[in-house]
Image 1 (tube, helix red, strand yellow):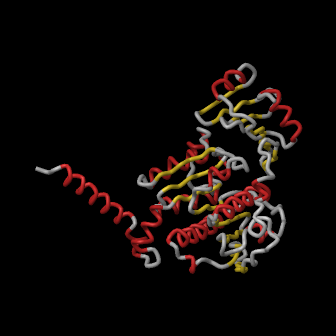
Image 2 (cartoon, one colour):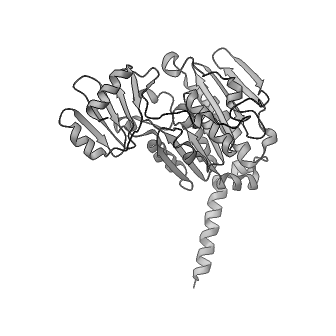
Image 3 (cartoon, rainbow, N blue to C red):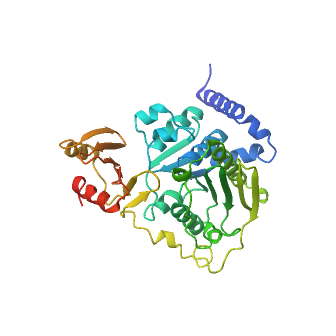
Length: 354
């Protein structure tokens, strides 16, 4: 008769057999091996932005066995995302699922042995440290340099490696920043704001997204297994349509850099999340969460004058004026149908309250 101890041992052996089967090809790769795989499974990784880059990154890391994945994004799935954001489908659009919720559903079907934490939030100076400071590694899946500089400041303040990536049109670039070993993203930008073309203004093709995000995932695996000697030493940029690549060495850390030199971390002190901001190319203004909102109460109130649809994560209200409000529990509101900040603020005040 089998004892409790022997049953537990048999179950443990079966789990180990399944684990080895799942990751067998990855462990055969000498730079990872058994020890590296254990490190990957013990890691906490945050992916900021679950759009095109973030979905590819998260897919690779979930399949690689990263033990805890925290997925952070403020948005929900729209039809225009399906061309390049690989974890989403048409049902996610119909249900207006937040991207991180839809991603968690898909990734859980890919690897049920890892912990996936979806966070529906707009990353700001007020929440960035709470969301990122306990990570072993942060990967950039964002679409704007303001958020990237915020991530950069958190990572360099807390000594966390940060893998940057960007893709637009048929071009992309990526670099790994390691506090104490490399300069930071702010050094690379030279004080610039990163303004320029975006996917919403000049478009993007899916292959460049897959390539850049896959390169980010490679650098992530190097960092997670401790093979920092193999890290790429510079900023890799490429254009897959015109067959061009360039590898540029990162600048030396600047003593005058407010992040890695002076350690002032300006993005952690300069942001007011409640100020209206236009989302480039989307005819949308976001107004930050001044206070949390009860979706049930807000739905009841808006239903008196608007057509309202809702799910557990957000509600959408079609306004008589022609615009649409998308309301999140954390208090964020998207005013869709205008890029006029004053008009968006007026509609917010009228329907949500000042």
